[in-house]
Length: 201
Length: 197
Figure: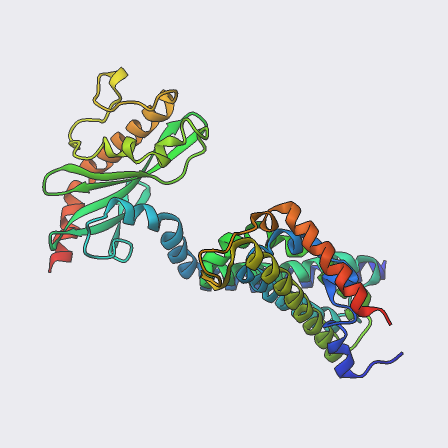
């Protein structure tokens, strides 16, 4: 059962990739994957929170009494979320405006909480850090893939940084439906199906 | 008993550390955040009222004390000299405050332009105060010495149909801006004079 350190990192990229395999953290997955910029912005924010909350919780795992562990985890996670919020406000305000409420909502996202409870509170600091980084990166990749698919088909453009880049000529007929809320569900469904087909042995 | 003390001590420790970290981070990012809010929230309106300005009115700004309140003024350069000032004011609308940016030409004492920044008025009716440029354009050229009024109150501003309260709020807000401007006029002119040097 014991995984090597490399496996600890790579499991989050494919085998246990958060939104597709664990089916956790779906609220932002559906809501903000309308442009690529939003998706990786959110991914980076979650990765930061995951990595640092995992490290800190793992470091404190022996001194946090088990009866109040959930409260302690929430304090730690909320602290890092506010750090992300302040930094985003100070340096990437436009992106902060677009992601809006979903940044503070990382506190109640199941991924950091789940990793704190299931992994970081039982494992060493190095393993917890790798676990957090791996899953955060996996989450970022997953959101980016979903967002690229939705944005390209729905608008014929891709936003890498601030301004959208048009990919097709004027003959392109945008399929706006995919950036609306129902389109998000359909795209996520297709992704999950695809992942299941690819994962079948 | 020991367990209880342990719980309290650990939670207090974590919360204190967290609070300290966040307080220091907030203090160190405050200035940049204020700057960003100016740029993204007020920036478009301030640039909107100073369409012909040759400088960046967001970058050229000063603050003045008005009693207890500190007000920010944005300076617009017109025809090569810093003579336009934009200030913020608010009027009481149908569903809360209607925030405004009002730009005044200090040489002629007339309005350069106004723009609605924040409001919670009814979409399609009161919200036109922000979306319909023709309404805001009516204030252009109004003199700061007399308050702006809608036609129903004996003024010259045509109210948006179906949104008299919002229109009054905008006119009232503009008049508020006039009173603030008149009250602080000596200090404003002093600051502008310093900028010319």
